Length: 367
Image (tube, rainbow, N blue to C red; front, side, top):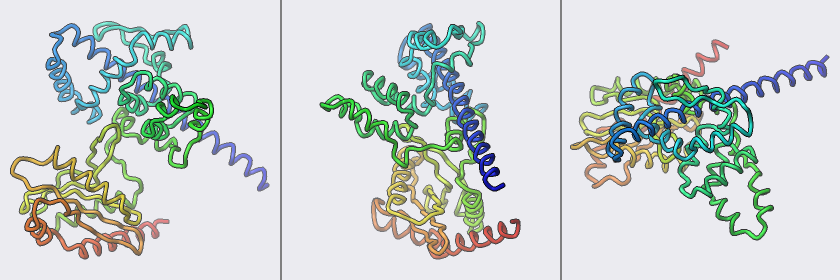
């Protein structure tokens, strides 16, 4: 009986995994086709206009302002620019060539006032996920870009594997190698961190924005609850803390990041960037926080404000801790002022540990 059950259980697991992968691929292909069409309309509109760079920039800004309230932050100016560049890099000639080799059913290319495009047919031209095409756009050498695209298709690379190969200059190393076949074989080998599950593919920020889903990107229910309770805790400390946002997303090059909580401290006149780690703290967390602070200083800090400060909270069982990232402030007096005005690190650690225990106990009662 156990052997028979194990067989049907294994078959169902394999079926569900295959269905999820197919669903993720289908959504990505349709999304990419839609973004290509958006890029085409932007380019055609520009060609019918003044033909100046500032004209195109004004169009992107206006579209961003009008589309974002309805469709989300996935239609910001930077993303619309990516769609425009995507159309220019993968022009109609390449799309027709790809589709004619696969099927006689070709999409209808019409303007916005004409027939709607056949997105299902067009999607067949885009076997890679949208995140991969965005990554490829950053490869300026067209020959290198086509090489990475072809190898990603041939080797079944995930977006992470593609990113790793581009960062390691795989194209240049292969071109210089005397044994190119061996290099290409080696490039097919995935590393442990390259794998992406169907769930991770669906949770890609691009996909979530495309599907109209909100910013509920927490890795676990525990982390999500801790962030919520932490926000309440800080607001209870007094009116110095003004809540700005939760799961605040930012984009660096072609990678998305999210900041768990963003507050403004009224007395210190600075942003407080908070990052929660369910696991144990390590040096990479500090480096990431300083990257967030540099971004916040350049893009979010207003005139007259002090530099932002970061707070890293670790909630691992038995190793909860809190640490402020104050290095790099312009003077020691400002750092001392921050330490005086911000909550005590031990108090924050205790609050996180207490909240974690309560949440785990509550979850245990329900199980």
